[in-house]
Image (cartoon, rainbow, N blue to C red; front, side, top):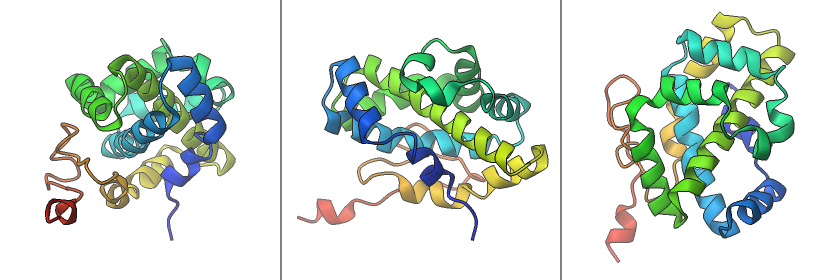
Length: 186
């Protein structure tokens, strides 16, 4: 069985960080948790979708020595490494992603944007640390990220889909949706 990178990253985004972020951004803990639950699969999906992009691979391999994981709340805002990765994986879709997750989570877009940076930092740091600890070269890292494509859409919370995040035709051109049809039948 292959590694679920999202589970690896969730270890960095526990209750203490959610509580600190809620306090720092002036939002509810439930709103912060909901936003993270939407952003995390999108970020991992973005990394997986760009698994051979040199900007992404360089950022991941450099993140393990950058100290990013040690200061997620303070070190992820205005971080050029994170900004370059977000630009590489989402391009002009960042605004749509932030707005969709803000609406879904019921928090402000500036808070969601900060959380996007934080989640991206946690992803880069966690995957970078895993790659360093397991001596993964660029090929191994690309393979690890490609393995995530099959699970990402299934991890989006009900009410969010890749399409609703503006990322509709990732993963080989097929549309992947989470279904909340059961909610609509009530």
